[in-house]
Image (cartoon, rainbow, N blue to C red; front, side):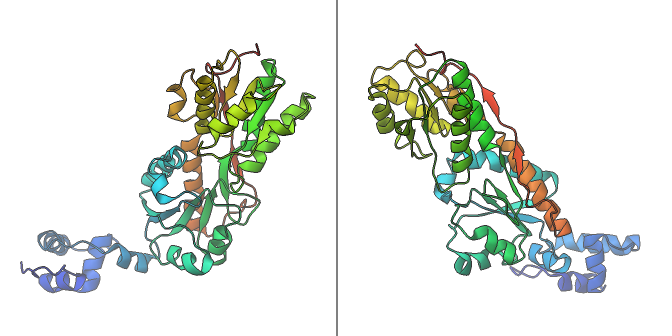
Length: 345
């Protein structure tokens, strides 16, 4: 069997080596037509000996499918992604669902720079559709991709929208966390919000406010602080709250990183958790059981969110539509009780 040096063989080369047409080689590769056994064996032998590998791009052009899903990280920086528990946990669900459907994943690491700059790069034929995780509220990424006809599904985005969206029920989770503290007997409950440019901000804040209102507990302005999911503000804000004349007896933190930061800050100034201060987080990341006391939190089903979003994207790619796009898919949160909450002293 002849070789081509360093040049990768093509279908034309295989056909010439076997004395058959290029169409016959294509039939053997794709299994779309019954051929004589000796012809099929001759072509398969040539493919193996000449080390021919079909081009994914060429096959995509002929089938109009690349069997690859794109993932854009929205507000999450690509470098931060490497250690970001939220994104990596969701991505595990994405990969699980994609793998079960024989699909690959392409991760777009470049930040979204607006439709004119970034949109062409997400519709350049490398993927069959795009999953956008955690876009900023002011971003035009979803509208842009939808307007260009790119099958798109979002994780944790503001709705309703023409783009299907999957998320945990943030409102229900925040209300559940607050009601847990109220049932323990707390009345002075502070809330440290997450980033206000993310979709979870408004429903979590409203869940806290509605739980307090339902229990006829006044919400003090000084008890609701604009914070940051990164946890960088936790030490100062916790000390600020605990230094009030009537400090909170409980703090609901916008996520677990913040909750862990609250516990460590409280301990640093001699405030016992949960003896003098109860703390609840949101997410249920692995670090919840590495802090002392272990953090009570609201678990969101990361893996299921990733799988469900990927299912919707695959459906859109296959059918071109998703009838219930305007209705977000919200998965139920769960209260996980650990040692960081107790009744007020």
